[in-house]
Length: 388
Ligand code: SF4
Ligand code: SF4
Image (cartoon, rainbow, N blue to C red; front, side, top):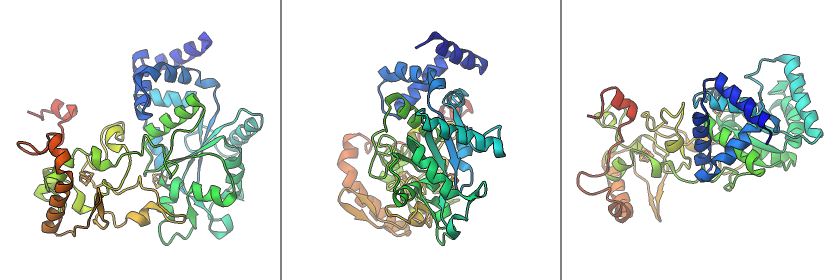
């Protein structure tokens, strides 16, 4: 690699007050998300350092609330990811100095580059709105779906970010007047076979986007994916297994009502609608908002936005609503548990769960003595005088 590549990056990093050490730390967190060993860090750093010469990444929008764009705008590390995205040549239609015709020209240039074999990665945020003959969403005087077809065909890979892009999300929830759908259904119906990576959740976790794009650039291929086109390493484990409130679940210590003593004590949120057992994401590890917290940790039940709809035309909102009510079976091993919201029955269900989990938990030492551990005290709490 030419020295100029290193020099260009270093001067950008220095300009943003980012040390080489911080940069390598960032590369380490990318490796962790991708499930790579630490030995891959130099390779990730090298890929990022030569990023200026890599393919552009075009971020387009459909039917959105712009929450996913806001999420990517919040990346920090502190500013490294932003720098990385600059280096990755990310062209986001909202976060862009250009607008109107100028912005359209940027998109046209990117497509022209694609025809010249430079190629591009298409990141798509929002649902695809087919309603009113495609006129539910128009761009530059044309139905947006017609324009999207050309770009989707030209892209080397598509990353659908956020649940709207994956299965239509909130936009597609009943009664769905815009006839909104997700990218997979759109590609299938249009007969477009561009490789697709789905990153659901609402909004998407920006760390996953950075890691996924770098993964494609480093390895030159898609990450290993599950049957919903989601990267297996990110969406491979239920939130429930990684949840800091799991000890309370095992001990049948539940929140039955918001504002209660049990809520104050940080008990398990399962009876008030937590979908952690059914939702497969690594939210508790990667966390959100600059790794400050995530839904359950901040006191809200998981509402299952990482779940993609199992069938075409469905969406995670219709699958999981009402959000604050437990309404689905909890499957533990071969057992199916259907507790009502009545505390005594939930307690019985938890006792049944304990039987199923008991041996494993006992072996792990989590049921000895005082019972399972409570949430760990965070360093920031200690700084505020907590954790004595
Ligand atoms: S996935 Fe959620 S945050 Fe992202 S655009 Fe859709 S509604 Fe907004
Ligand atoms: S709060 Fe949710 S994810 Fe956490 S232990 Fe309870 S049910 Fe599982």
